Length: 255
Length: 253
Image 1 (cartoon, rainbow over the protein chains, first blue to last red):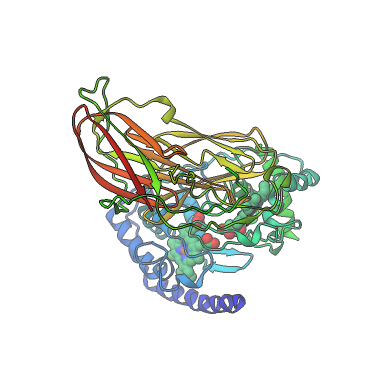
Image 2: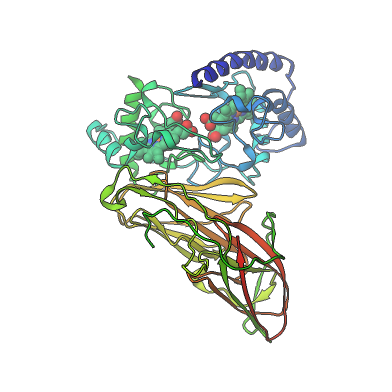
């Protein structure tokens, strides 16, 4: 049942990526007059809306509510931007994402251990990406983007034993499993904020939705994954311990 | 209160007919003004009982952390009805007062305790702009996962780990659209608690014997809200005369 659904999703996806590519060729609106990147001009909003409708609405819905025609094909569902929660943030806990965070998602798409759900949009110009981010900000009703968080420096020494010990003592095992395959004892009953089932990441797959380098992993552990059971550890675990955990998970993902 | 027991309840007295179910947007009232003296103030008090059907509560197997969480099964608190049918954990709010008694500090600083694998208290009322302190008493991993509830949609407000006993964290409540916070713990499914907030200090939570009292109300016409985590929200119009003491005894289902 489940795998059937996934297969169908992949098939559909190939078509969408193709579609997105062909739309992009036609949408080469010139933004050369745009001097200040941060200026939210009516042209920028208009461009963003156009690009959004052509490329994103099919999954995220015409009004950003996560109810596009393909939405039901995906677990987790395409983000409902109007709720205002984002998973892959580099801002402080509780703050909106930075503009760079949204743009990173647009460029890389989203691919986790159970496959790719959001295509990578690699052909947009930087103005087009800014315009798209602006549309998402408007849907989410943030007054401003979050500010990038000043990540404490990486420790020079990697202590794998310490990383492994923290992975057990901090309760990661209960969800992500003894070997990091996303099969801990709590794994099967978890739900996201839409009350839909969600699987803990399988690190062994090597595919992390928010990026697989130690800095990306550090941010996920520090701030949690909004809207899912993955809690933030930044309040009660030191930055250097989070680095050792991040190195440990990075090493599992690389093997 | 035995937590490890299936909680079922029996019906009670009479229903308050004028109550209607409502699920309105939480309209942020125009700024509330605190005044020192309220001329001809009145009190609304009363007693709530439950007259609905028995409610079955889903039970969860305690699969780990037995030393602290116990053994067998546990269920969310759900409905707490006394032997006589009185209903605890009901928020009663009088909405629409524009100028009235000052806020007391306790409503600005909420506390949520994680103890014996439960959240305490089950239902609390706070000022809309309050902060909460979350305190872990259990020597085990808890994550406290909180959602803002609004028109049937839930939005995560925060979710953080408290890996050990003694962890204390302060969270400023930042509601986007709602006024009620639902809290659960992904490591222990039965754990559940609620924070109801208001922009005026005219509210109370019924005690386990169903009693509530809201003093120092200026006279006027207001909306009376009754909210319970399982039974939802009901509202009615209420008219408070000068120097009055209204006694409302009613049952909800």
